[in-house]
Amino acid sequence: MFGLDPIMIAIVALSAVATAAIAYGLLYSQIETEKKTASRIGRVKAAETDMTKVKAARDRVQEISKRRKSVQDSLKDLEKKQQERTKKAKQLSLKARLTQAGISISEVQFYMMSAAFALVIAGMSFLAGIPLLAVAGLAFVAGIGLPRWIVGFLISRRQKQFLEEFPNSLDVMVRSIRSGLPLNDAVRLIASDGQEPVKTEFRRIIESQQVGMSIPEACTRMQQTMNLPEVKFFGIVIAIQSQAGGNLSEALGNLARVLRDRKKMKAKVQALSMEAKASAAIIGALPFIVALLVYLTSPDYIMVLFTDPRGHLILGVSAVWMSIGLLVMRNMINFDI
Image (tube, rainbow, N blue to C red; front, side, top):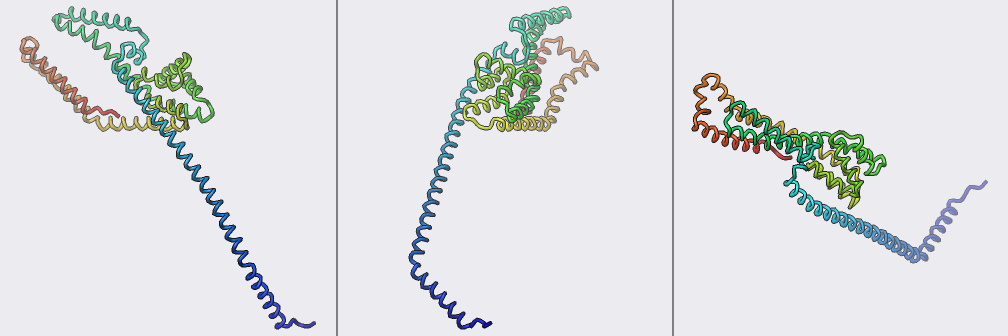
């Protein structure tokens, strides 16, 4: 066998390279034209894609702007309605206050019970030998002041119970909505299986629906029987969701978290102000304690205040100034969250 000649191999290789160079030289302009064409087509396609993206982004921004404007308009309307309700809430009738307190009696029954209590206190005071002016004052307090104070106390206690259970009820609603239940069924679930007084308030929402009200209107109306900022937040969330749409379960979950944070903040403020409240209680009780100790040690010395007209004047002025001081201290140590 004969070996390959290196010279022949070199000549063949040079011939191939020369042929490729000649072909490239002849086809260079066509290749460059095709490259430019492909590059131009790619830029056009990229521009079309960019225009599509820009248009989609513009549409998305416009949609977000419309939704934001819708939410702002809804908030303005709700704020106006809320201001009107606040004005009306400041002039609550006795019937509305009894409803907020959860007392199922009529106004006539309340007035009759107040009058009977005033008569009993007046009769007992008269039999005890108290002066007629003091008897009239005690009867007024027993018939007018004390029953209304009791109603206010019951309203406050019921509101505290509502705030204790309301975030838990919202969590139940969130889980119900995430599992696929509509808002109506979630409200019915709280109205049937919730804890008092949340159960009663949600039952009123269901009853309002049965007479033709929508869910947002019924939730907003709940503030008439449970006048709390937290209830206002709940009504606003439901109203905005019904008008502008959105993830209701997420909104209610955020609301429940906000309510718990408000509760923690209230507890923290109360803990920080307990020292001031204790000081105010000691200062308020000190005159009565001193008067009792003086009476126990020297009764003749202090009885002049109760027997002499000048003592009565001193006691009256002291009571007024003491009340003013207690009110000032109360306003200084009470904070709204």
